[in-house]
Image 1 (cartoon, rainbow, N blue to C red):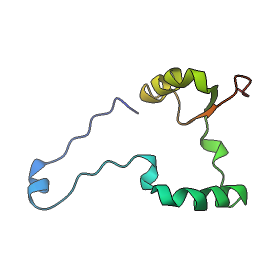
Image 2: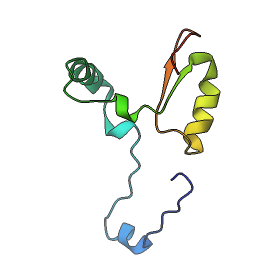
Image 3: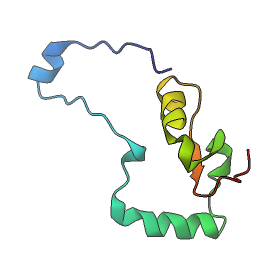
Image 4: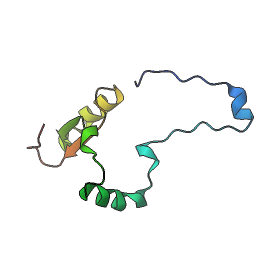
Length: 84
């Protein structure tokens, strides 16, 4: 949930531990072509993680839903006639 708090002992940071935030699963830009190939070859299923499909013109609505925790992943379509 997006509104959960994270607590930790700050002494652990002083002892050399790291607190790290990862967005997009930690993938590098150079990983994208390989991941697309794997998806296109049905080596893994991303569709089950898509909770919404929206027109690109609704990008702000999509971001608000993600931030509010109301959507896991939004796929934005460039045309207005996108599937729901």
